Image (cartoon, rainbow, N blue to C red; front, side, top):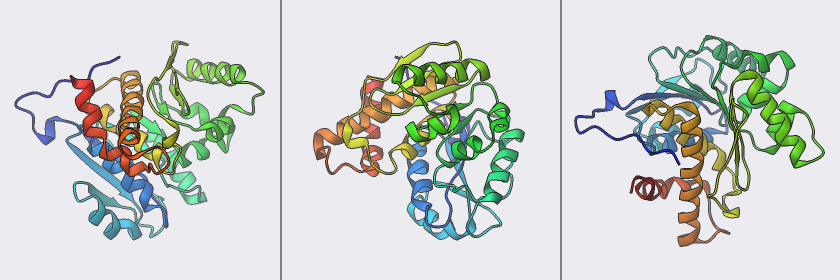
Amino acid sequence: MNKILPRPVDAHKGSMGHAALIAGSYGMAGAAILSSRACLRSGVGKLTLHTPAFNLPIIQTAVPEAIVHVDSDQKHFTEIFPTSAYQALAIGPGLSTHPDTARAVIAQILQTTCPLVLDADALNIIAQSPEHIDILPPTTILTPHKGELHRLIGETISAEEELEKTLALAKRLHIIVIIKGPHSAICAPDGSVHYNTTGNPGMATAGSGDVLTGIILGLLARGHQPLQAAQLGTYLHGLAGDLAAENLGQESLIASDIIQYLPKAFKIVEN
């Protein structure tokens, strides 16, 4: 497994990466909060969250460590967020597929040059029109669950066909696709598949995917290469879930518990 990048003794917040996250809509501030907290727990120096104006007081109370950049719209993401100053960008948690948001997501992807993670509604927006899939920059990381994946690749009749079509997509566009689920499959641009060995059924809970997006974003901004970030992030996400389940049980596990056990997961991997 890939190692966590060493932390220099003279590190400061400006040298540890600045991540950007576009997340949240009216009634879905929680997704932005979970993803933000997970990112900040993944070693990044700074995080800037772009979110609709309505979410500002909620986010600044729930995640005081995050810098908040407010969209002009009260309820939806509607305007391009400049990303030249950031080391990585994630788009999608709790975003909605509002028409103005859909237009903004496509425009955002087209003008983004830093490493990119797409999740949740960003994936649903991409899947709305076949031509949108071809705008993805090389090494973009997609983190779909089964429903989102099938909107991208079409319906399949077997796990083998699902994997085959996902690998074909990863190879054609030179991107990374994480098929979330038991033993998540990480499909690489070279046609290889990497299966994750951590995680448990207790993680089948709302917000778990938002946490994964935040972890991968943090690792990318820290300087991990995209495939490394996808592999390591998926492993750490599952390991934190395993630690949480060991102490709390699977039945009552919630997404916030995964974030709570991230520090222990990092410590285990570092050692």
